[in-house]
Image 1 (tube, one colour):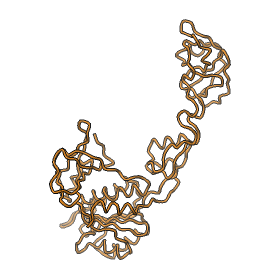
Image 2: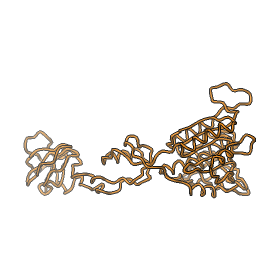
Image 3: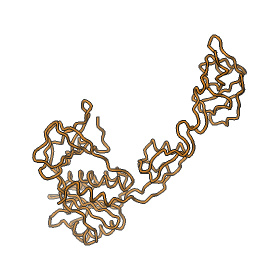
Length: 407
């Protein structure tokens, strides 16, 4: 049996990025960039007006006030999207709409509110003294051409989508999404909605696995309940090893009479890196590899499965598709925490902000079979081994569940 820290290091050494692929921009949300995104042109692309008004030469407006306005000759106008082919000379101005290019010769824009407005013939009265550069957005002032906008490995969210679209990117080079196989073992498992006979239980773990894998962007290639039948298990795993990047099991990796998963994996050439981890819940945790496929065998108890997926599988799925492992954050306990003497302890919990600091409390339901402990949870609380329980006011580390918020 190895420690959690040693097990994490073993896995980290076997993380390999998935292949790169090009996808249409509209299909790239939630994926991770496989290259830096650079500005294909400066932003703004040209000097343009920040306001609806009139482009002027600032020097022509010196001393102008509402009581003593300067009158300028109107030579035309430019709307957004039109080519800027006007040139403003001494004593002249041009109507200039928001986003329109600033005509040559002009070095300021006066808002229409500071003039006598439109539709006043070929003369415009200016009611204030314009300052050079006023209301002009200059070429490249936001972003220079060639500047890196978004770094490789960044997740594509609405901000990245909008920025890439702004600079004309119709496609994105991203890392491929993981292909996963999910299975649970046991003659006792019945699908929800079916009659429940004596001695049977409903399959819940595959629903948890499937939702978590989908949240992480994985493609679920295979998903089955497999009876306690060695041949059926071998057939499923043979196919999964050929098709999938990650295989995740619920049950069958402990010491029971019908716990075939580990043995069958070894028969199929999977290299075992560890089998038992000094943690609670989830001590019988199997991790192995076969070529580029990573295999995680999690216990069958539902809390062990849920927490095991979040602590061991979720980070791996994120990293192989180009992301990073979510870092644990420090928090302060508001109640006691049942620490283990020799095992890293995980419990579902609630975290919130209180007087500017992050605090948390564990679920009062601590059994690995008590899946209802996850219902109100927004985090998983972790403690290192110790000789005594932790008390209120002591520090712990938490993993915030990514689909939850902290308030």
